[in-house]
Amino acid sequence: MALIIAIINGKGGVGKSTVSINLAGALDKKGKSVFLVDSDPQGTVSDWYGSRKKQPVEKLLHKNLFITDAPWNAEKLTAKLKQLSRNYDYVIIDCGPANDSIEKTVLTLSNYAIIPVTPSPYDIRSVKKTIDLIKEGEKLGAIKVKSYLLISRKIVGTVLGREAREALTSFGIPVMKTEISQRIALCESGIEGKTIFEYAPDNPAVEEFKNLRKEVEKWQKQV
Image (tube, rainbow, N blue to C red; front, side):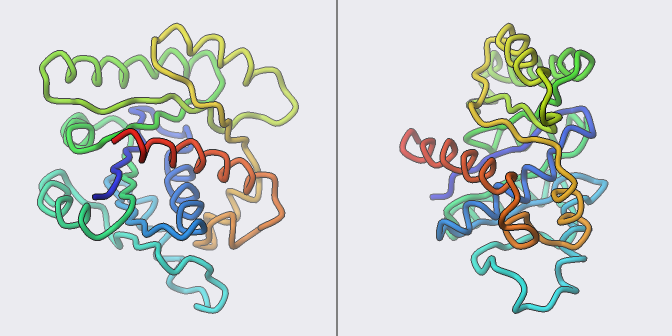
């Protein structure tokens, strides 16, 4: 059965799609089969996939990475997830900005949730809404997802990441050891429809996503 991972945060601009795409690529590079679901009505992953289909096949590395070509709503996700779970090692669901209907469905169906947070005081405060949604669902018995915070889009060479880690511990949710930095190559790879592994294999972001993959792989043993 697949490990189902939601990449979620009600706030936009925190790097959810970047994390979803490149974590999926990192898992594929390790030989895992991955299905990447776009559940964001804005269709960021679907747009990325559209650009990807224009690339020469010989320049694309990932052979076990499958992607939705249009955003799925809550009903379609619910209908298809059981079959996906049987056919893939991992299902990664990229969620959009706040949309309680889809978010609640995704959290109900997922084993784990990664909540990317940028290291700024405003974004750290705003993540509380997503955390409260999860905790409310847990109290009602509808959500059993295991949640982790992920520092995302950290500016290289600043102390903001360390300060953010200290601030995030107050929410009572584990903070992943890996931190994803903001890098131009990640933006450029997204425009071209590639993962960072395909676009810039020597970029430091590759090592960051390998480290994220290692943390996620440990979860497989806990299910």
